[in-house]
Image 1 (cartoon, each protein chain N blue to C red):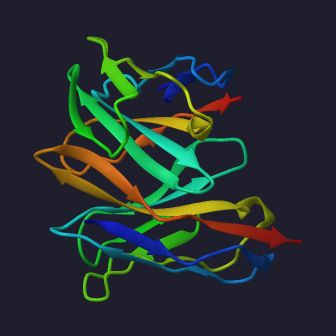
Image 2: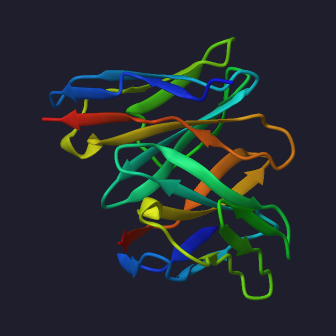
Length: 113
Length: 114
């Protein structure tokens, strides 16, 4: 079974621009979550989607948004990019049954200049 | 709120040495506990998990036991290899009516030398 895939793997954007990242979960997984990883703050939860609805949200500004499609694929968008948004963005999926675990994709490395 | 504290790295060991990476947690309710590993340039890989007190998770020679009395989930391996060099993250799941999220520790970098 294919793992979680994320595109693109690398992005370079300029401050003030916006960016969209894409994630395809493992087949059959309906819950998709996004995390931001930086050297200073570590791994931080952004949001979780299930059945096209945002079910949980971390402590990030409104510039960070996401959505999920009917096939469970998800996108996250960051508007008005700031230098501090440079990070590895990780997508994770889970079956969403009982105490099932999350599986992570390889991440998208975003650099804001 | 829920949180995870793990020992600071980097940890440097010789091949075949014994590994312990300490992890303690604070949580309401009964979270599941996880160890993830991250190799350079890659995402996180699930190493092992435990879903209730006294459960022992194990995989690839690594073990960790969910200790509710000490709120700990220490990672151990009897004999490390150079290929084990990576960053290890302890995490707990917060699963409530408001959804699911993982809380991670800061990560512990492990370097194993030949």
